[in-house]
Image (cartoon, helix red, strand yellow):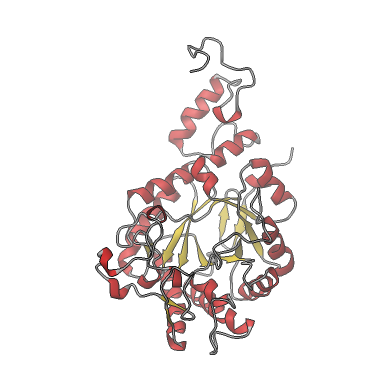
Length: 394
């Protein structure tokens, strides 16, 4: 039998991923003044130890103003390099490539954590650098009816914020990451510039589609210039936001991003409006058509994400040529060992060699001693094993 594509290596520039399984960046809202904590070490490490080929850290902010909450990670100062290196080194030690997403929340900044109702914060919340945490955006338009009005960046300021991604890319390289992903989706700053609804500027960054794309393209140029040529560069887009930015626009933008050295488009959706995108009703793999469109029409490698839950589903996406990489988010929260589990179900790694030695030795030893044992995620078609002390109803 041919080796599953899911567990086939993929080479991007000078980096070869051991498989096509990517842990999508997921906000943890657990940093302290921008610095990672032991939570981040545990969270990233368990995915890497579970067999994923690439682990991408959550959106890490390129300037202080870009923090969405008090718990966002930061990379706007050299002081963040060594703490972030600890995470990158640990991911490597667990057998995976390390990535970091670079973002700016724009008009969605300065809010409470989601489990604290995501409410707009005020000076009364005791933020010690309140004035430095300014709310900025392409235009003076709030994210929604209950949000404060941001200050519109002037032309020179917008150009300077774009350069912040270049400085952040250099710090990410110094911290040892293998890839960076620019966050251009979900209603955050880059997406706000792309959106005709959020961007009502009349200067070089607004008006026509070409002008609205300018900020995203400048960000990519600055990041690529500061990022080593042998390291891959990803960019996440809301391929369709249901608010004036459509897949056809993303295809045009993706072609231009490829020309500027972006290697992979991470294909998501939505974020400008506070509702799901109508063209992609939520269900298994609901955003895969966006990855297919970018890969086939823009001619650039794509990463599929969005309710990809099962190994055979992921393999089918790759076999159908709809994407080059598979990113999992909340399913990884549910099962951090998803990659290991998929490999076992697909008969790829009977000796658990893809795992770090402390896991591989124990699990390999059990598999050799009990070849008929079915792990818990496989289910037990015969009911309770013989000799169990478990009683019905317990």
